[in-house]
Length: 438
Image 1: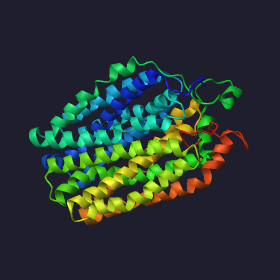
Image 2: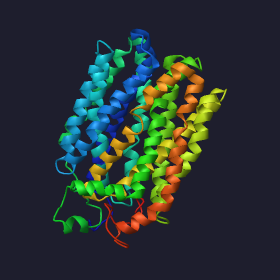
Image 3: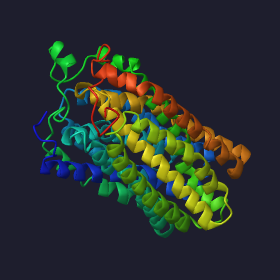
Image 4: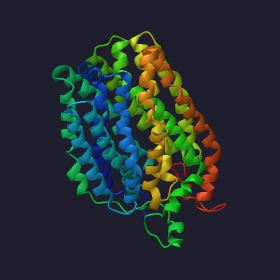
């Protein structure tokens, strides 16, 4: 571990470039959602098939994650991310040129294959660039790409889609996404575990980097990690179809024009998601100095409050009320996402950190939003928009419950990580701020 707990100036350059890549990641992912009504009109596809367009992305994303994680723990992480950014950006352009829905499904799978690289590997590069006392704040900035990218995707899709048709925003978004590729390829990679305590487990087994498959399976003995997987799988099950179909809901139920509705959703998501990321990242770093339960407690509170707020966003009669409720719900959901991703970074050893993220991504999508968009699309076709959207919100209650149970397990897992009562169990020593190890 470096003698100083201050990050090097180059760390901020790494964070800035990866933030921009993550921004375009979510622009390319959500620009399609903004133009679904136009695609529906052009191709005559059902809501269930519109859900399949989201699931196609998720399938590619989920299948690529374990392989990317295994490679990233042994090979150049910056080169992996650069190639993945290039692949998903070209696939987004291809989706804009797709002659039919089956080609669109194919390109959405390829987009998922590419985007898995950034979200598996990117957090490990950020985590290795910043000390644990600043890690939650750094990761909160990286994850700002989620609300801001989603907002720009909605805005770009709604505005260009109304003016030039649904293909134009996809092509433009994909072309812009290529820009950070060279910067990432040439980026100087941070040392693995540079700000983490020495890893006696890896030293005892003669490995400086890259874990064995036994190490990865050891994550199943980490109850807190498993609860994070359950929490984010449930949140993904609810949140992905919610955001995927929300512009259509604004048009069909609220009667808001597509460009206006997409812009409203985009602005609310950008402001609320940004504030949620930053506020919870700062709170997590400060509260972690007082209690090891800080991250689980913050996430539990966030999901408990998000559920009624999102319901208000769906069913309140006045624009100020439903946009305000939606904004508060997004604030809480993105705040919880930041704290839980930081918790993963801090409760896994550097040697297997990328694989931990890949295991999280694989499981949360397998049990979360692989099936939920077409399922809820079918529900919308059968039950209608108003009743169908109510069922989408129910999994958030499961997320809150998982975080509450994690309050009972996190201290035990951190003691095991510190070697206070047994084996390492795939975890680093705890004891300071910046994550659940505090």
